Length: 328
Ligand code: G3H
Ligand code: 13P
Ligand code: NA
Ligand code: ZN
Image (tube, rainbow, N blue to C red):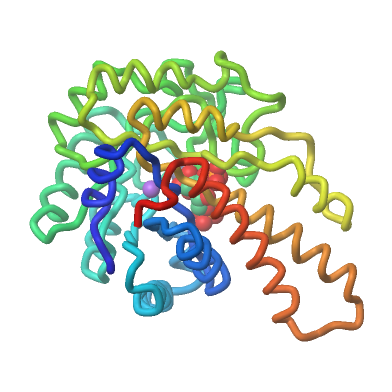
């Protein structure tokens, strides 16, 4: 059944587990996530970015998720809108049947310029009013995602905050977080701790100075009843980077967020863990390998099935590592 984010995260908090929130763009990703959830008995969060809505179309995404719910009636599913740029964007998603929306007021509507705190409170509060009236949950974000190594948003394609960010902007302030939650009444709060979107997060295996899990502990101590969200939480598996390179792809040296660090976050209030890049890397590696090994094949299902299997294995591993398995 489709449920709200609040319902799922309240259960997760009560039972001390985290839930991966996987980005979806197409049928194969949705199938992979649902098969993994079915095999591990896990509740699911599927989230669609603005890019996904542009790629697949809002109606296709919605109907594919409804098909997933029909095929797996025993699995609770949250359909979440990732990084809403404005109250209008969130309103459209609420109308179209999303059970949860993220209002990302940490950036202005251009999704590049860091926004003032007052703007963030204003737009987020507005979305909470709209959403809660119809039983939809809201995730807010305080602080800018970005790299403490380079003081930039980090993502290669330039999406996310533009220009130089300061150390202060890259780490959510616990006191301000408490005020933000009180003023907006969000159901979940995304925090900035040095992670960024995409494959290029860290130039070396991260240590506490560039991945601030301790900041999560401070925030959780201040607002123990707020569900925390980690963005940019792909682990960037070295094995898949290797497969991509072996079969003609180009990936520079890079490191993601270790699963053990996410587990530490889950012990301190993290309930939703956003993952997109890991599925992209696994599917890319599997497709490159399958194409290279089957040069006369042109039944695309062969390649897509390998990609789906690779994505499924990533999802299963995260469900198991975060304690989601067995909670459906
Ligand atoms: O927010 C970041 C997610 O990885 C979505 O990426 O905007 O390319 O779909 P996207
Ligand atoms: P990754 O790029 O680390 O997978 O993060 C995804 C994300 O935060 C989506 O909102
Ligand atoms: Na989100
Ligand atoms: Zn994100």
